[in-house]
Amino acid sequence: MITKNIGMLLLAIYLIIVGIVTLTGLGIGFITGAIALVAGIFILIGR
Image: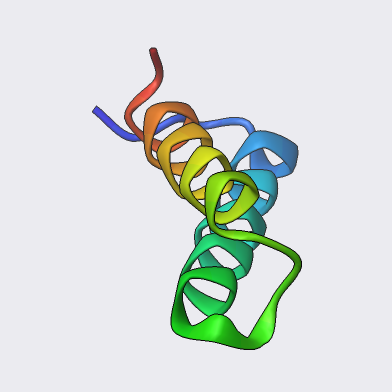
């Protein structure tokens, strides 16, 4: 079930993109990227 709130949807997409970019070595740190990626996925599925 994907969230219906547009703000949370955009936040989830942003966090997933930041997480992926960070994990590829272009961002601020591995742990921060992993947390952003997981948070984006959890927001997207509505947990």
